[in-house]
Image (cartoon, rainbow, N blue to C red):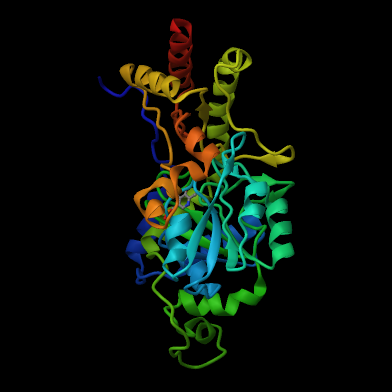
Length: 380
Ligand SMILES: *Cc1c(COP(=O)(O)O)cnc(C)c1O
């Protein structure tokens, strides 16, 4: 059957070509050029961070964060198992070992009681992940980090343009990361950013980002030629990506508004089924805004999730599960974890179903999805 409603369609403003054309007509393509700077300045302004670095991906930004914090073999870090691979693998590149934390089923995000219980003397870092564009309890995470003297890197890959208590996600911890992969709300094909909220980390971040050189100091006029000062890497994207991204960033409110329209229809049309307890969805903190990154249903059993998924598929509607928990993946098991170690993660991962969500999803197509779900519920 042809796909009637796809799961994701990457966001397009229709005007990205104007800035990309300017790159083609100019002389600099390699990166760290005028478009990268404009993206970084706009991001700094939008989220109120002292310094933002564009990167080739969120994965690269997380790797840069691990290097910046000088993680070492033997160090451990705390990360939810219910997340994308990069939240853990990026820090393993430094030799550090992940300790997986269970989630709270009402948010699908880190359970702070389990977080506290898993802290060991080798732990150096906490990696909270904001799921679906909703903020996890960052004030709680930061309080635990202060109590135990731990570093924090906020994986805000899905959370640009969302806030808790009026504060943008990605700005609570000393370091935060964003993704501009095409599956995220805004994108440049593949891209990301490292947010540096602790000004003390800026000099070293500059050098890592500049492939381990003091080129940024030269550009500022502090030295007359640049040289190798530390071990860095190539983290920044080309000007083509930065130009495409700048236009997308300038349309952030449109993206969030259109996705919000989709969420509102899901909530309104599915309200009777929520009331009947057929399924639940994510609970957001009281004073918060979401960017509507995803809309999911959490069903009572895996069998019901599969039944609904196949029902929708039969009508050409793509609905997806999400992460295979990292602790029970081949790498996770190889590190000595057992599937039963994180019971909430294991159970909820098998019962979650994400519905189609993208800015250009027509309201009538959202109704096609909700009608199909109502049809499924009536049959059972
Ligand atoms: C998408 C995502 C990433 C990885 O982003 P890339 O830009 O594809 O590297 C990391 N963490 C989370 C939580 C994500 O959703």
